[in-house]
Image 1 (tube, rainbow, N blue to C red):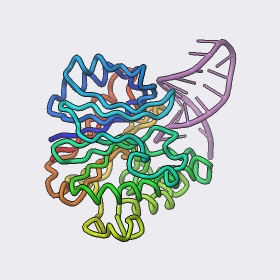
Image 2: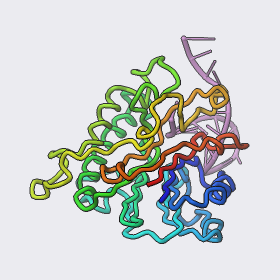
Image 3: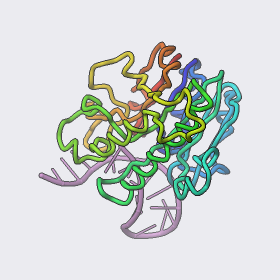
Image 4: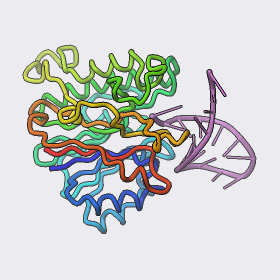
Length: 278
DNA sequence: ATGGCCGGGGCACCCGGA
């Protein structure tokens, strides 16, 4: 089973890139899109349905938006944190459409578009950290019910220095600041504080692990390159799109790779697909 | 040392991205 994640930076602008990629990658069972940038009524469903795919979309005007494109129908599709957390807990964190998930072959595939954060100390940075704190609760609750979880998407975080092309200003840069890294590492470890007392069972102590790093140790592998400064040609990128797997699924993982081909096309997305197989 | 480019909205630039 293969699951891919791709921030397409507008699904309408990138439509032929996405459909061509699906045709070229028929073994991909589910493609998770981020930054679709379109309300559900205007999502270009027909080109995907004509190829035989099932669509699950959760969009908004101009910004954000996520979607699942699946060869087979998905079970128990959920949109937003509010699908399993109460309104008071969620607060304003579902105003932006960034969370969608569904189940295929007993695996819950959770597709995320983590907030960018703009710049350290900004209002958007605080929003990113609050969003991640809520994600921790959401994952704790999700892991109470499933052992097989694939959390993928555009995380807008590079956890390791080798995930970035340069050493410069790393600590002061969005996506690699110590506070973001520490917060996110904490999200990946499910502890008592994120689970209600009576539900304390198997999920406690579970850590989600980076599928890409199961197979590749070296740096220089990236999933995003700035449109500016000929960054792609010079491979000045960041690895910020990921697949994090629960232990059982991580053990099963056979392969995880980045396909840089779509980044070479005319008018590309600034991100490129990351695929995991298990 | 800085910024360089995109997409959307909507028609002039501004917001947001990362």
